[in-house]
Length: 372
Image 1 (cartoon, rainbow, N blue to C red):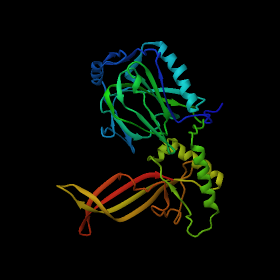
Image 2 (cartoon, rainbow, N blue to C red):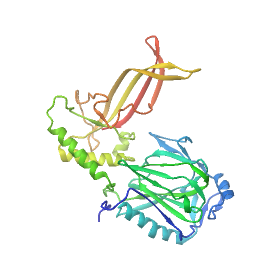
Image 3 (tube, one colour):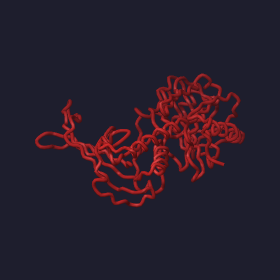
């Protein structure tokens, strides 16, 4: 049996259960968590939590402007009610898998216990692959009265809002989405939200789910590749570079560890480049920008007009992660013309220096990532 059936599947969903069993949740250093969670108990629970970090490029950071949430690690959590696990696996997981189109599951990992208070939020992002084979996130929101906290999902130009606050005081609600789907959590406006986060995992070697909407994208990419191949116009580029969302080391590539939307992007391009007769490689690209430095108040400085921009391509490997010796002009990329869907220097630089430059002051920005 295949791992997915995308014919009637969704990319994100929510459901509320009025008759869900009490999990008998117990937290080390706190004790049993009585539900619905009272505000005074929530304030006490915060004392055994730590700030939730998030992934930024290759780093894990804490920044409350981006993510303002408390969390407790899975190894600090236990469940005293055996009926909870039975209900969760037979009702919740089966229902989520059916609606997402996942037909083969190898594991379900409890990841964190999350506690949101007034003002807690998480800016739009895509989940990183926390475990090999992770395809979706399941959030179980336990009874605790709150308002706000809507989850906004977006995928392939479609948007969906998951709002479960109405019955939060007495019901257990489920939120779930593919790990590739972009999502954000709006601020909690009052109360506390207590939630369990799980990773849904499929067996090794089983194809990833085809998220609804991807079939149109695959058809569009196939059309572009075939049109490109049949074009004899002198302005037609000989090569293109697709910019991935995340950065990867060669070691990471050897382990096949792609994250977020890159999983689908790489899979689609591997399939279509082979089908259409193109060669595909992985490579690291560095973009060096030199800009005028604009003096601000005090010692503050801002990057001004672009003076020089250079792109360097390194560590080229084939799909088996074997080194490939590409000579010029194969490694000579025009920036931004040969790069899609965005420029290499469209975000914040990985490194930034301030130095004198021909009698003026300049910023040197380095944008580094593994590209294709």
